[in-house]
Image 1 (cartoon, rainbow, N blue to C red):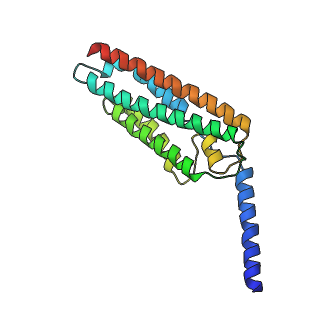
Image 2 (image 1 turned 90 degrees about the horizontal axis):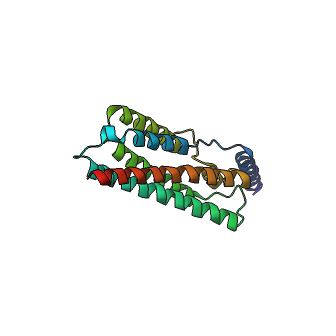
Image 3 (image 1 turned 180 degrees about the vertical axis):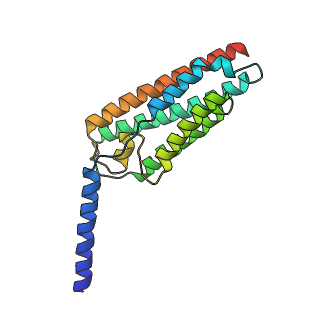
Length: 193
C-alpha cells in the first residue's frame, strides 16, 4: 500500500516537472511561409520558362489545387486562432487533434507543391525539392519543430497572446500573398490556353 502511494506521488511529481519544463521552455518554431512565398514568387517570375501550350491546362489545374489547399490551411489556422482568443484558452493545454489536422493540411500542401514542381524546369525543381525537404523535416523529424507559434501552443508550449496574434497575422498575410500570386499565374495561363 505504501509502495503504491509512494509510486503515485513520484509519478505526480515527475509529471508536474515535465509539464512545467515543457510549458516554460521556448518552443522550437520555424516559419516556412517565407520560403513558400519566395518559391511562389520564383515560379511567377519564371512561369514563361516552364509553361507551354502542351502544359498550360495541367499547370492551371495544379495551381488551382495548390491554391485551394493553401486557402483551406489559411482559413483553418485563422478559425482556430480566433477560437483560442474568443474562448480565452490558457497555454499548456494540448490539442493533439487540431495539431494533427494542421500537420495533415501542410502535408497536402507539400504534395500539391510537388505536383507543380514536377512540371517546371530543373532549376525550379531543385528549389521546390529543397522547400519540400524543409517542410518534411519540420513536420516529421525526430527533433520536433513547429511551423508556427499556433502549432507550438497546441502542443502545450506556453506562447503569449501577443506572439500568437503576431504569428497569425504575419503568416496569414504571407499565405494570402502566395494565394494571390498563384491566382495571377492561373489567369496568365488561362489567357494562353
